[in-house]
Length: 585
Image 1 (cartoon, rainbow, N blue to C red):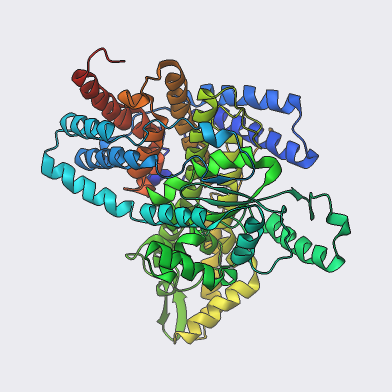
Image 2: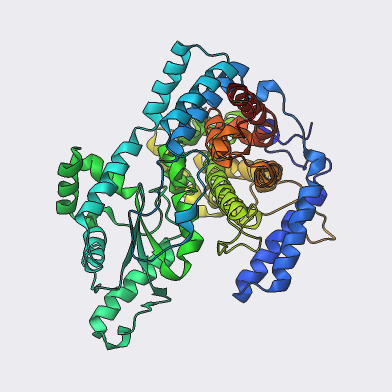
């Protein structure tokens, strides 16, 4: 056993054999930090990053294992999740589209290779083979359809909204008008705003150039106009990559600026209440930089939209900001689950003093931390899967190279960016605990809270101080937002961290996805859906659905789910399809 699992999350040491892989992860991260500090990606850095990634995939091999069935879940539940995953895959083709409107003239999104286009005959054949390969009767298959219809209930509304917008718009001048309806009274002029509209995505495209718009008449505009736009552009730069509460949309958006007349008009057009329309629009509107449109559009339009309309990543994205909020005495159930008591219950009155039950505190904190970190890991996983879809595009469309901020090529997983994501989430998770044990005002807040609950003032300060000290000594090392596993002599932190363990598992997962990409490029069928094992869209949707059945356990089994559960089910489905039409490929 490699001990990369939920039970060993807080272990003091990494699994045996993990040190070479963790050192490679640390080097890949150092290269990323170096290129960000220098402001450019040198050919040497990209070459070393590619070599380091290749070595990392070799170093991770000793940790490859097949997790036990008990950690994966009951076989019947895995089967049902796969069946639902295939039915969800049938909806993938609707989750984005070639642009309904495109004033930029984007190239990449127009040639995205969908594995399963909308085809009623293909869907019927897939359902027949699916039922037979998984031993399902008509009633069980119909029950799965009903569950999937519920999961996809937001998709028809989004499609209806974008069609209504497409009918409403004509001419470039209207794009600036629409942006004002969404973002408030900005002094935007005709030609400042480009626009891309897909079946579920609304993308305003701006010629961003630092604190100005890259337009010919910028310097000729009144100073007051430029000042308003510069303040707006500064907010975009600050928030566009950090605000994800509207997932799969991202970045700057103030809901109060959304014009109620626009909402009312769209509400009437689609026949849905205005509040429902507004909630849907919040998850659809993003701003993209014109100079980097091809870098973002495939990744967002085909890599992320399905994660919300077919899967349920949006729930944990919405909780990300709360992960780093100050730790409260009422916390515990929020992230640990309803069965977890609040932190305040670890304190009680005894002999006229407030005293701490240390075992209760540690049990609550462990459940809370597991939940907090899992929220962050869902964000990292969603990016890995979006990178997987993007890499599939690059493998199958080598003549359409996608720009990338990664040091690694666009046709592979972007593990250097994944490292940054995981370390960022580790910092979020650590912050409320670190503040409690390092800031007197945070401990004072807890003392005040305890006395407000009616506990004695006597002993309260000492009890809180002991709680903070105990949390630091128990979890402080594991919460460090660093890649550990080296030695004091090497300069790499020793021991283990949550971030390091998560990155080792994600590396194992990426190694499996890389094999899927290689085999897909080598053996892709025509039509692609006839061989499901070579359909990355299916892998992405199904893996997400399997993961969401038990996030905290299955994150640590993503590689096994890919290698065994999903591959075996895809192979069985493919055999049934082949049996129905032998030699057709």
